[in-house]
Image 1 (cartoon, rainbow, N blue to C red):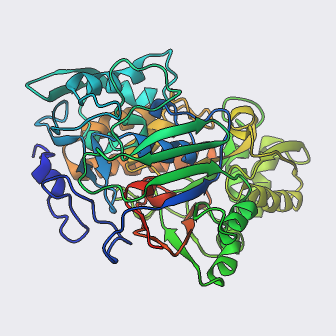
Image 2 (cartoon, rainbow, N blue to C red):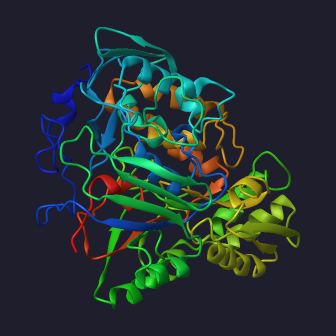
Length: 515
């Protein structure tokens, strides 16, 4: 049956979780069923990172602070609801009969912050710029499937894919595909169609955005201004919240929850999602490329200890593949890999690596990785493997250490579809293929699943991919980590969108200040 991704199709069945009004009103989300929103107020928000690499270019966003900044300034063709389903945004309708040719009808009356109207040319440019190898887009491998984008009828864009992909409306809701003005290349300032206008952008220091009075959603946003800063250290971030220096923070350590709750003035929001910190075992170099060594490292992950001790139960045991239990394509029945030091010792002996010294790099930048490294170090020492843990600072970790050593840690934000997770992090030619794992069968399944019309067959393909990653992949994923945000209780309307913390990075559009 051809997908109906028109307004009616996108909104069908959403009565129980909220819907967009015909006039493009506010998307109802958990946490927003409170008193009527108030206009006004300014808040300060601290996220986990800020550096000279901060960007106003959606194509280059890499960290949560970037995603928040981009959702404040820009709008996408679609946007996520609380169930991670794509809803119409700048696109009033998206339709396709074959999942290859997609017809996008643009919303009328939308203007960029400089007053210019949204046109088909803006959308075409925004989609195709990711294919430019000189841009350095973080979703270049995803955008490669877009063969063409061109004008259709009035206010209409036709997008043709290289092959069928039913997930295009979901892909277009991610922050990297937010719409920028045709031809823009200078992103020292941001000219978007989002709920806020950027007035101050100092990479590594702060971003200030003020309310866009001409936002295409009537009445929104409510806040007058948002200041966004980065505080990498979690204790310092919590202290800033409790002292009143900031009103909202993300990535709260579970050990801080009791302290935050004890004030009575602050709230906690748990978001169960697919966030994970993974052990990266590089497959493209010796000695970590040995299948026996890779499996041994996975058996040294004490998942239940990590879930309880590191995350105080705010996590779900994972099984060395990236698809969380809440995903519709999650494979039930895959045998759970367990903590088994004797099996690990046998495998290390077979790999000839018992007694060797192996550097392991961890950083607070990868949530929980420093503690995970300590747990691994102790378990390895008990069986004759010397893991030399190098704790490196958050600043510069992603550019200087992540994927640069035989053994490191990553930290992957949730993605809304199995295709995006696999395409970004496990496809052989993906820029973020963390372990350098290459598997032709996996790549074939990934391409085939995108356009498979038989849903049962598609689910089987994604299940087969999970088995391949679990059995042969170069990452160990011990748990899926719940996102924990903390906020001043005077901040109302705050809820969850499980693509990530801070309401899927898009809180600014929905919250208001009640003081």
